[in-house]
Every structure is written in C-alpha cells, then in structure tokens.
Image 1 (cartoon, helix red, strand yellow):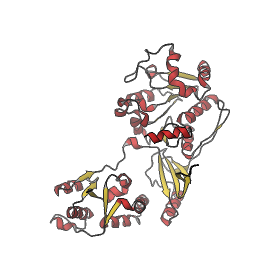
Image 2 (cartoon, one colour):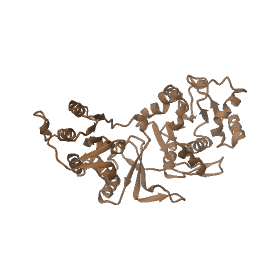
Image 3 (cartoon, rainbow, N blue to C red):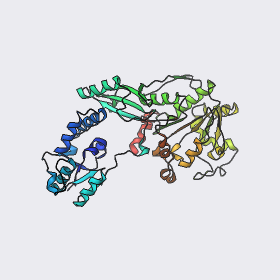
Image 4 (cartoon, rainbow, N blue to C red):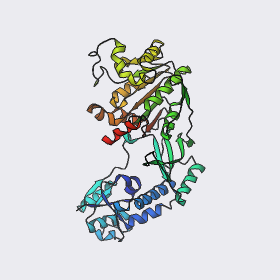
Length: 417
C-alpha cells in the first residue's frame, strides 16, 4: 500500500510541482489557508496560492482530499488547536500519514509521535538557476489581474527575480503545435528582463554576418534572450546553457565576429578544456605544432567561419587566437572575448582561472550543457554550478535555451534519454 503524506502549506506554496514522488493528502485546514492566501495583500503570495489551486485542479488524480477537521489540542495539553501545524500533526497521527515539511521544529514534533517525516528543502539549489522565470496564465479573472499588475507596476518584483533575469509570460489558452500536430508550447504574451529595479521589455537587434552573408536573428523566443544578453555591453561574464543544437555556438560566435568587425573588441580567444591543466588530458601526446594540436578542439568555431581555411585566415589576421587553459594562467587579456565552449567540462578552479584573466574592455563568454559532462570530476566539482553563485551580480548574465534548431534528426537524440 502506498504511503500517504500530508504536506504543510508552505511546502505546497513553494514546491508543489516537486512532490510528484509522493502521494499527497490535502487537508481541509491546509485548503482553507490556501483560500485565505488567494486574497492576500501580498501579490506574490496571492499568485502562488492561485498557482497551487490551479495545479491541484489540473492534476486532481495525484491528490487525496481529506475534508475532515482535526483538533490539534487532542495531542496533549501543550498543543493549541488555533495553531494549524498542530491540527496537521493530529491529522497525521489519526490516519498514519507521513509529513512533508521544511519546518524543522514541526518535523521534530512529528518525529516525537513516530511519524515518517520528509524534510523538503524548498530553496532551489544554486545550480538550478536558469536565468529565466516562466509564468503561464489563462483568461481567468485572477490571471488577468496578475497580468495587469505586471504591466502597471513593473517595479513590483512579484517573482523574486535577480538582476538580469528574464521573465516569459505564456498564454496557456493558446497551445502551439509542430508540423506533426504535437503540442510543443504556448503562444508568448510578453517577455521582460529585470534590471534590479523593475521589469523592462526584452529588446534585441538582428546582426549582419559577413561569414553567413545575411542577417542573423533569433529563430525562437528563447534565443531572443541570448541576443539581448550578448548585446549588453555592461555584462562582462555571459553564460548560455542548453542541450545540443539549441544554437549556443552559432549565435555567440556570430555576435563575437560582429563585435570584431565593428572594432569593439580586437580578438576572440578560444579556450576549450583539452590540455595539461589539472584534470585535463595532456596536449603533448598529440602530433604536430600548436595549431595542429588544437584545431580538432576548435572545430565548432571553424564550422561557423568557413571551415579550417577560414579559421586559419582569421588567426593570421590576429582576430582569433586558439589557446589551451594552461597557457592562460597569469595572462591579463584586454579588449578581447575569452570564449569557452563545453563549459560543463571545467572545474570550479578552471572557472576562477578564466574569470581572473578578464582585463580591461574584455569579456568572458561561456556555454555548455551539464548533461554532456564527460568525466566524474566535472560532475563533483562542477564549474557550471560554481558559476551560478554569480546570479544577480550586475556583471553576470545567464540564459538557458531548450529548443533544438539544428535539425529534426538532431532532435531524435532526446528519445535516447
């Protein structure tokens, strides 16, 4: 028989979608608290309470609702039934429910009654930062009021966004479908970026690529974030993460080349982790001169500049420099973009080394995909996870892309997960 768990109200408000591994009982006292919060003067609390109600309505089969009222004072003379946590405890004791909570004191009380307790940390791990918060709204009165509030008071940080974080609002009443009729998302209502003080409309411009011979513009809505990020001169550490084929290297390399053509930076320094630094394979075992040793690791760059011949030309013109991480130690790099691809194969110390190389008028650009991490050392000592500690810093920006644009064939890789 499946174990049933009651969850306290705070867990439902902060983490309801993360409770799918448990069979949850919704108590009448908890439901009343949620209804009360839906009329709160605090807009963020009101919004979260409405989200929970909608989630329960849309996933009714995942929950059991217990409509009985429980009197926590029956637990003993030290327990007051005006305190809802005590009533939740008594419900658990009476029915043999386990308890899911992030309240340590409540958990200790529950353990005193021999209840199964799951301490659920509703604070997201730093590595869960994606650089974008998404909201799905319907035509309901509550959602339309929320939407109006966002437009009327953009300085109200309803979703606890950090500086340079993006906000996407999707219309859940307008699903979208691919060419095969498969649901793949919703129509976008609007997109914003939080500047630390208020929401601003997301803005970007297309760029003209000399190497592509045409304008380069976003292929999908999420790529618009990356264009906006790369075109922000005040952000000096720019990170883009996402699975294969979402356009990380293509968009970032074209922007870097555009900045070189405009004379805003002098060169792109390509630094992919492949050499004799700690936890990196030695470069010496490869034949040839330095270029021949490194060119295989720079093919993602060559693919976007006309192949190896185009890459060699740009190197001769001193517009591109290919380096390994060991050669960067101690350097003071000015007016350049230090470009790091496959960032998931860097440790925390590697990221510190790279950031420390950024001199005047230089920037550090990184991209990668945690799912493509090649060695255990990069999982246990992840540079990407360390990098996420910079979220909210005015010099740091991050976006995460999720739609493969490389080809329909490339999308098949997802079927192998």
